[in-house]
Length: 328
Image (cartoon, rainbow, N blue to C red):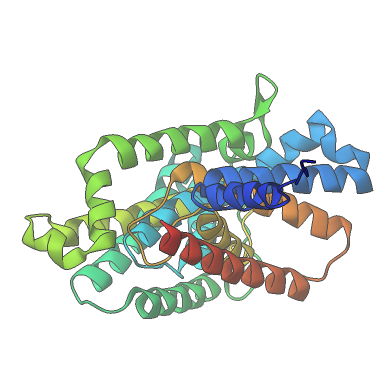
């Protein structure tokens, strides 16, 4: 008589293999987590699946996504930019002031130029002076905060957003918010630069080994400065859109964005030490963070709790991705 045995190890092994594959593909993993989170949230409130709500989440994600794109460029180098919060605020306040003083046509160019100038100073400090990026950009953030408080006298800015800033922040084209179209344009340009140009390849090479890149003939200092300039300009653009969304610029408007932006980049699979990462993963990370923020707001989670959750997510993903790197 023949006994039949069932291999109970196969389901467990298949689940383990699936989990390992997801770890090796962070964009897919974060996208899957976003879908699960959205379905779980819809069980709490059915409005989470309404088209109007999803468009609103995309609009909110555009502000974070634009700032995260620039931050990703810096993180790919193995650096960090902690001046993003007050670069966002400075870009918005200077754009509103330029629009009121010199005309609406000057608002957006001046705001972006201010962000690029901040990025240039950061890049020179890191690439030329060789000051650690965390220290230099944190100091730059404090300087910007002092300058903006001095400029406004400690009060709310008196200049509101221009009509074009409002159109970009809250207007719609073909039923889709203009902020989303702006994010799509930035994302397409950023993706093409990273994947189709020599500068994009140099960014990854420098992130892996800056010294080897320099000895290979790469002008590492120039690439580092360009990435910090891009980070500052995109942060300022995010601030301009935020000012248009809220109808005016205000102090500390960028403070809630630095940790979620870093979390989005890390959740998307970008190595915090540089050299590895996919922009599609950053987009997926942005959507996950925005959905998470929305769910926490519905649950009336206090700000302190949200910061704890963001930090815990970053630590968990660093541990998981570090384990996947060893598996790889």
